[in-house]
Every structure is written in C-alpha cells, then in structure tokens.
Image (cartoon, rainbow, N blue to C red; front, side):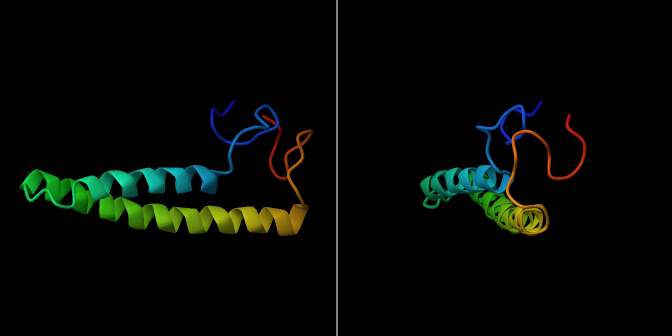
Length: 88
C-alpha cells in the first residue's frame, strides 16, 4: 500500500503531480531564504535546488500527461478497481 498516492486502499491520497507541486513549492520557499547567503556552501545548495526544481517541473509535466492519458482512455478513477494494472 502506498502512503501518499491515491489508490483503492487510500482513496484520500494524492495524485503524483499534486505531491510534486507541494514539494516544488516547499523547495522554492526554502531556496528564497538562502538567496542572499554568499557562502560557497549556500551557493552550492541553491544551485542544487535550482537543478532539482527543473527536474521536478519535468516530472510534474510527465505525471500530468499520465493522468490525462488515463482520464482520456479509461475515465475517472474508481475506488473499486484500478484503471490499469492489477489491484494490489
């Protein structure tokens, strides 16, 4: 069973893209706190965060594409059976 993602066993869970949006927002907030810190370590962490933000944005787009594909092909998510794959 997943802890965060929406499944038949966890209908109150999140879509993957929703979780990634939340994480991206948190990283942006944290990154803004260190933008004026000129120490090399802070710059290194900020650069890493910027790279991570780009990767998260790409992951969000891919997750949204998957959700749109599932919705278009199989309709809305149902709690009684998965749209694809086996019930786990």
